[in-house]
Length: 109
Ligand SMILES: Nc1ncnc2c1ncn2[C@@H]1O[C@H](COP(=O)(O)OP(=O)(O)OP(=O)(O)O)[C@@H](O)[C@H]1O
Ligand SMILES: [Mg+2]
Image (cartoon, rainbow, N blue to C red; front, side, top):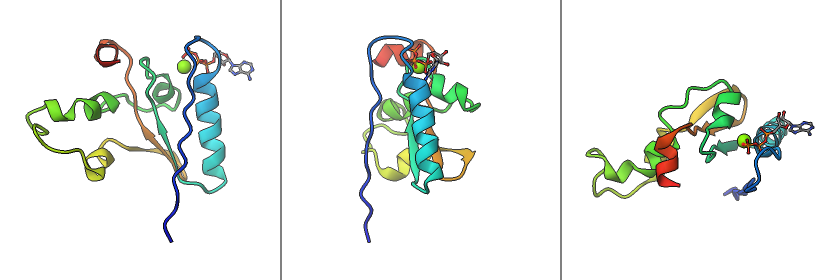
């Protein structure tokens, strides 16, 4: 039976209002309930990735710009392409698409 994915975006323009804390806590809670959860770190500081102790590269920036690279030129993005950037979090059911801190991300946001 096909499972429906639910997308939850945690967004607020104001700084320091617990976006990252909520993302990690909610993601971890869902994973503990047995739901396969993918945390996608669109934070231009890549804080979620750092908080989870993961290295930041390769990251979401590489996915967003894949078609501009020689390897990805002219290719359509497929689920398999996306999978190469998704990382295990070392916690059951919890996966991470890392983000990065710095000018690379700010350039495309
Ligand atoms: N429920 C809470 N009670 C007390 N402190 C909290 C709570 N949630 C988060 N904090 C603290 O508030 C601060 C800001 O949280 P967090 O980094 O998650 O915010 P943010 O919105 O992601 O910030 P930024 O805009 O800088 O990315 C952190 O020091 C965090 O530990
Ligand atoms: Mg944050």
